[in-house]
Amino acid sequence: MTEPSPVPVVDIDLDALAANYRFIQGAVAPAECAAVVKCDGYGLGALPLARSLADEGCRRFFATYAGEGAALRAVLGAGCAIYVFNGVEPATAQEVRDAGFIPVLNSLAQARLWKLTAPTAPAALHIDTGMNRLGLPAAEAQEAARLGLVFETVMSHLASPSPEGNPANERQRAAFEHAAALFPGARRSLSASGGALMAKRFHYDLVRPGIALYGASPFDAPDARLKPVARLTAPVIQMRDIRAGDTVGYGATFTAAAPMRLATVALGYGDGFPRAASNRGAALLGGGLCPIVGRVSMDLIVLDATAAPRDISVGDRAEFFGPRLPVEQAAEGAGTLAYELFTGLGRRIIRRYWRNGRMTGEAAS
Ligand SMILES: *Cc1c(COP(=O)(O)O)cnc(C)c1O
Image (tube, rainbow, N blue to C red; front, side):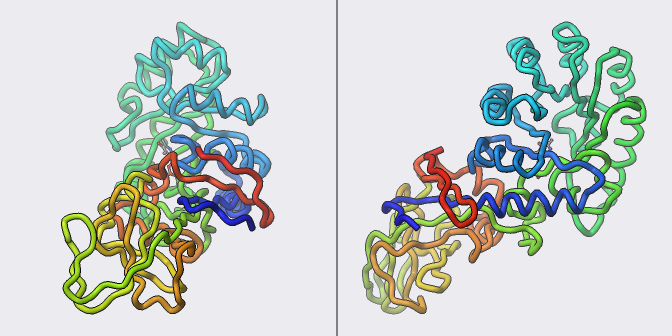
């Protein structure tokens, strides 16, 4: 393995990604598993992820914007369907049509615009069933059905997926079935990662996972069936010993109660690692979990290495999440979710992609 330079790195395990895809596809069969690669593949790099997923047999990809779709088309070729979650507006409708993307139409206005732009081109219809975020109100579904568009998929989105079974999910399911009945030829899709990991009755024809493909549970606690895909590490760039009463970092928010050994690591909120992890999060270093002490600053984090099992020196790398430190746990230590940790990963962080134990390419996002 090549030694990374003394900068933060996120290593992305494409074999783990493929395994997660196979696991979800197996769990939902005979439903089909699509992949949501919006927001640059949750910050991990949409193009290498999409290429790997396509190799694994994935044929449907969801982006948010037409611009994201264009980059995907270049790596996926014509054989894959590319959906655009935010649908069409006057400024993008022709681009979506010309590129052959499938817009997810979220309102009657969008549906009418599509009717004017590409009356015979396939579209998806997103019906809101209680989340009140995006999608056509269910009461307008009848009117959408009368437009005579080619809805190849009708979808909705669960607000509160939960493995325990939440009555709100059943209400959304009933509302979804009711509205979807107006579109008898359309494929039905209700579930993202959460619903895909729930009972069969949530799977319908197509599931749309994102986060679970990337190895994090949508339910915020590690799920042993999902393999970690991303590993964030950063190098120790200085070691120091401090005495009882000494303070650490901006604002002196941490005071040592006893002599301590500190490791200063090259990662900070400028890299997207949340400042909320100040005096709260931790990283693996020297074979043990080392707490973050003091404030996270723009480029630096200080770890308490006093109790680390092994001696630490400059150049050693701390793992902030990955195979040995679940991203769900890291997210909790930063007051957030895996979703936000992944998508926040800064442009300065080097992305490295691995397949069969070998690095396949390096890209600074
Ligand atoms: C983001 C998104 C998904 C994927 O969600 P995950 O929780 O990451 O699986 C699926 N469907 C819609 C409509 C989304 O916005």
